[in-house]
Image (cartoon, rainbow, N blue to C red):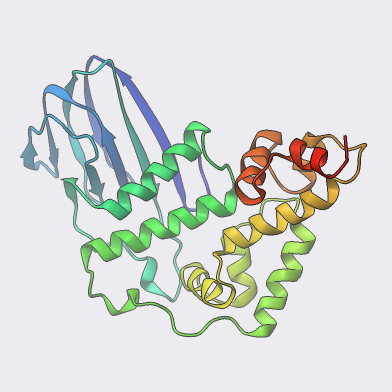
Length: 270
């Protein structure tokens, strides 16, 4: 799956022997879930590793570096969730990961949790939403920077939030475009802030991330539309900006506590 400045892929491999090489014009971050009976991995031809159990380990390959090696996989199915990052350029370099050194088979609980969320997006068990994916992507950038240098002053919590005018512009835009994909880049553009600082300023002002706010507005629209008996759940889902009835069911149950069908029944609607 691809978005404006990054992409994600879930790779599943049967028990076999494979060779691999990773390099390109985007940084590469992957979460491994494999056990190999034999093999080796190197980054830039150095730092050779023969680690067998890589479950929960991560590898980061910046632009200009390469990772290669071979694996003889031991398990019936091995997998990896990989993110290719080409961060947007802006006057704010909080998104800059170009100076982060390569790292092979490292551990970081925050990065791992975010990558597992990406896995659920790609395999269809999670939320398929443009703003959600963009938020995860920006979170990965922040976590990579923080893992490389926890004392970087540019990563300190933002002070202050959005102005009343900026918040009104966001609300008006979401109201008009609620049935369409709404990207973080679009919302940040309305405020004149970088995506990274917009997310932090918005949460400071509203108490929700931009994605959570958009989701809550879509659920509000869905609740109103569910009162119209002639609309199917699928119709309501698309009109409220969800990818379909399954996504609406998941989010509605999570935020309201019941499914859309049960909501209609509880309110005397069929």
